[in-house]
Structures are given as structure tokens and as C-alpha cells.
Image (tube, rainbow, N blue to C red):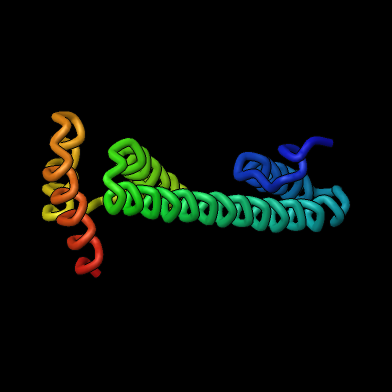
Length: 147
């Protein structure tokens, strides 16, 4: 069995929960054994646990990716390495999206943070390192003071 098959999965967990519901439906029919209902409840419980474990794993991996991106971006800013700064920004943004999506939500930044991200993106596209740095600082400051 491969690693992918052994790791918890939200899809597999949802399928187990659905199977549990089906088992319980059979168990509700007159003349069927109580074991159908019992097995159905157990499948649902295991499915919920597997889905939650997969969600937490995905969230943890995304958070680690986001932090790694922030560190890479900061390093690029400090050393003047534009490529590291850009790659770090992209990695941090991807991690943020993955983390929030694991929780079933879409990241909604403050208006000030959006302004900073836009300013940073303009600096990235135009090659204006100072504008990009200012945008990064503005976005970070807005994120840290947000909540």
C-alpha cells in the first residue's frame, strides 16, 4: 500500500460517512439485524475522524508553507534578492489560500492589506524593488494589526 493510500483523506472520510448512512438505512428496515445500524454508526464515526485528520494535516502543511514563504520573502527583502522576495510572496500567498480552504473558507484581507498587496504586485511587475518592499511592509503591517 502506498503512502497516499495510507494517509487520511477527506474524500475517503466522506465516503465512509455515506456508507455508514446507507448501513443505518438498511438497519432501519424491519427484520434486519441490529449489526447494520451499529456498523453504520461506526463507519460514520470513522469517516468523520478521517476527514477531520486530513483537514488538520492539510491546514498544518499549508501553514508551514505560508511561514516558509514569509521567511523567504523577508530574506529576499533583507538581502536584496528580488527572485527570493517574489518566490516567497507567491509561496506565502498559496499557503494562506490552502490553509483557509482547508477550513472551508476563502481568505478575506482588509482593505489596507489589499492596497499593500497591489502595491507589491505593481513593484514586482515593473521591477520597482522599493515599491514592492513598501507594499510588502504595508500588507504585513495591516495583517499584524488586523486582529
